Length: 501
Image (cartoon, rainbow, N blue to C red; front, side, top):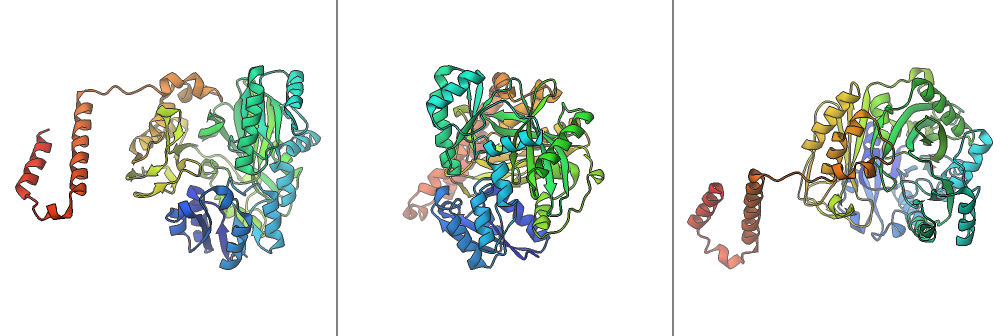
C-alpha cells in the first residue's frame, strides 16, 4: 500500500490532494520552484523539495527533477494533480520504469485518450458520436486552409495534447485562419510541449456537459453523473454546476452509459472525465477525455458524496471500486465558482501581486479550496486561479442563494480579482433560469461588466480609506531619528481628524 505521495503540482490542487492523503494516514512531499518557496502547499506538506526556476518548463514540467525528488524523499507514488504532467504518457511510463506508482491511468490509456486526435479515432471505432473534423493533426497552413474549405466555417482549432482551454481558437472568418493556427500552436507548445493541432466543425449554441468516471484495475467502470460547464470565457470554465439544468433523466442515463463505454474502450483505470458537446435539442457528441482529476471535481464530490482523490489512491493500490453504479445518486445541487487573480476591467489580464487581506466565507454547505494567504505573493508564471468556491444546496435555488451570500462574504485585497464578476453571473437572469450555453458571457457582457454606482457615502468611505492609507505610509516612511521626536499630541489630533471625516 502507498505510504508516501509526492504531489507533482502546486496551488490549490496540491493542497487539496495533501488533505486527502493526511486523512488516509499517507505522508506527503511537495515540490516547488523559486516563485513558490513560500507557497501554502510547501508549508502544508510533510516534506518539500526544490525542483527548479520559476518557469514551468524548468520546474513543474521538468520530469527529471521531479523523479529525482521522489527518489530522494522515498515517495512510493506520484500524484500529478491537473495540468502540468498529469496527462503526459511519457511521464507516467517513466514513473513505472523507476518503480514509482503513478496515481492516474496507464501510459496506454493516456496516449489513446489524452491525445485528442487518437481519442477521436478510438471513439469513432467504439460507436460514440464525435464532432465532424479532421482525422489527424494539421501539418501545414495550406492543409488547414484546404480542410476548412471542405468542412466550412466556423471551426475550432484545438491542441492535440490540450486541455483547460489552452491551444484552442475559434475561427469564423477566412482571414483569421493563419493567425489562429499559429497562436494555437504557440500556446500548445508552451503549455504542453507539443504543438500538434487538429480541426473540428464548430457546433452553434453548444452546451459543455461532462461525465465523471471511475475505473479500477479489475474491469469495473462507473460514472458519477454530469457537470454543466457552459459558463466559459475564452474556452476557460468559470462556473460549473451539477446536475445540469437542461438534462432529462433519460438523456442522463444514455450519456452516462456512453461515458462508461468510452472508458472501457481504452481499458481505463483511475479517475477521468468524458466531455460532450450538446446542442439545444440535446444531441451530443464526444468532445474529449481528460485522463486526470478535473478542476471542477469538488461539485461531484459534494453531490455524490465520494472523495475522488481517495478513490484515485485506492485504485492505484489495486483495490476494487467501493461503489456500484446502482448505489450512486445525486443529492441536492452544487455550484463551483473559480476565483482568479485577474482584472476584469482590463480585458481580464492576470493580476499577480501581494495579498494584503483575505476573508474566506464559511457556513453550511460552503467549501473553499484555495492556497493564498495574507502576505503571499501570487506569482506571474502560472495560472491565475487562486481559489474555488464550492457551494451545496438542497436544490438549485437554495444553491444559488447560498452562492450569492458566500461570494459577497469572500474578500481578497491587494490584488485585483473576479469576485464581482462572479456575483454578476449568479445574478444574471439567464443563469438564474438555467437558460445558457457557452455563449453566455458574450451575450450578457454588458450586464456582467456594469459598474455599481458610487453614492455619496461610498465616496466618503473611499476618502477615509485613502487618508488612513496615506497616514500609514507616512508613518512607515518616517526616518528612525524622527521617531524619537514623535509628538503624541499630534498623533492624537490626526486620529480625531480622521474620525471627524
